[in-house]
Length: 241
Image (cartoon, rainbow, N blue to C red; front, side, top):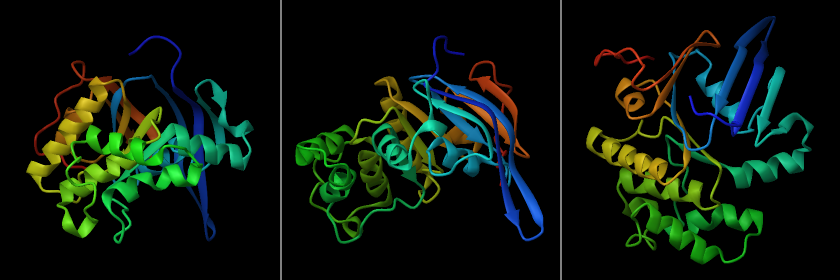
């Protein structure tokens, strides 16, 4: 694994939900370190805890127990307003369903997080983000005027526009055909080569193979954590769901 102080460190992270009389233990003592400029896949079957882990990494949810350090800072000590600022500026999100505003152009969709954060020079930053994902010729198009792959590129540009420390992608190719999925994964690889830290949650082996490290969850625990090259081969038929 990469040496040096990690960008993210989780220690003993647990997450429990009360569902009626039952307590659901979604995460059971997760220890995980993510360094700058890693491209990491989180794999696991349905119910393994990968979505819960992503929400905690993205500061969208808080653990029941354990500690989370981001850039060396214990996030449990941050106020709600400080958490919102960190989430907006340090973490970028890419979703399976794109989550674009249908009546707004690509450039307006990308500008949106900058409006919320009060960032100046929004238009120029949005243009640069769209250029970075190869959509400089689609800036004034609305989502219904673009292909699925182009819409996901807009979503990635929106996630990148604040230059986040880490990009979290939740099944980012789930609504795309195989050819378009490869194009999106090529884009993620290019961003990784430029220095971006990326975590992709997926149940598809082909996507995990494109990453540099694979963390597998099972029943809310880390079952294995391997860098690519040290990872046992994944059968081509392996689809976890």
